[in-house]
Length: 459
Image 1 (spheres, rainbow, N blue to C red):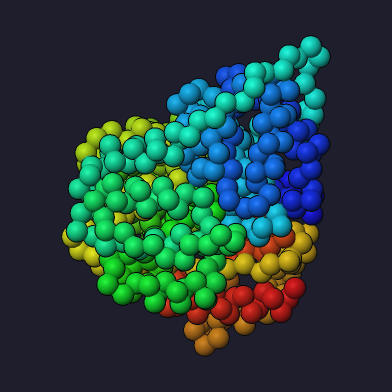
Image 2 (image 1 turned 90 degrees about the vertical axis):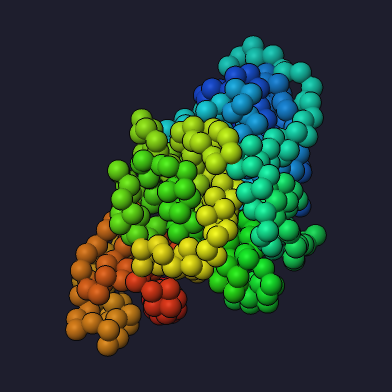
């Protein structure tokens, strides 16, 4: 697996993230992107991240930058610290992918880099002659505390009072900060599942064992929350342990903070268009595309089906200001949704949303070219697509014909009964992603199982 930019930064096998290749990308970033002369560096808890972070710091110093080491910290906390300082940042994380892989997320002083920045990095691999090394790196352990304080200031110390919240800690780098934040907001917190071994938790495609654990832990609680490894994707389950879709979290949070424009990928459910927002913009999957569509839009937020939430304007929380943060964040949707559920319960809050539900899964060890070949075949071969759909619709429709194709990102097929099946190769791992949408949660789960089986059979 070679290093490549996908929907969440540069990713690859740890064995490919050699000091030389890390240095080449960091050097190029320092040469072609604005940095403010400073680079903040953070990392997640996987075993390889400490070494790679040292490689990042060494390369940045050689490129003339002043390096600030923030240690083990969630991605949005690192981004918040660097943006406030007018500095660039690099987060060492592979997010939810397995421990044999890792990656780099790059930030300019205003937030995540763009696709244009990625292209510039790939074409520039050396610093101009005469560059003088920067000073020795310094340590800053305050990024996490500032991240927590942001939400306490916006929502207040009584925002979650009388609520009992479980936290599934696993190996998430922000697990202690998540607990600190919930307690500072007034909740009673119980911790579950802390692990010293890295666990690749994908909030969009949870293993059945995780779902079973959530149901077991939920007794006596109002909700259970968690994040992925680097803290930019939320996981929220209700009092029965049932997981709330990330896109549903996004649309509730968007309404709660008074957004006027909502930007979200095509993989998010269609309920947003029914909620009365001034403008809803659909994009390809990945935060760079969401950010690009948010630019120039007043009162804009963005979110993805994984729940990562981007705040594009200075909002007002119920207790104080909530400044913009143009990177995927897990804590904002967790807190905003829990606050909204405090009086009526999370299950009832979700039930009041438009009846469109998504579910997703992934087939691992599928090279991108193999997944893309299947997408191309189902897109252009009508007979192959009809056979594929016949395995999904069963007796639910009179015909196997699709009602519409959307090629924005992969292949998204709308069935005659308005259910949706969407397949696309992952942009940063050898996986094929499968998304479905239906009018009921159970129907979405059933369709996902059928779609997974049908896709696997055709690989």
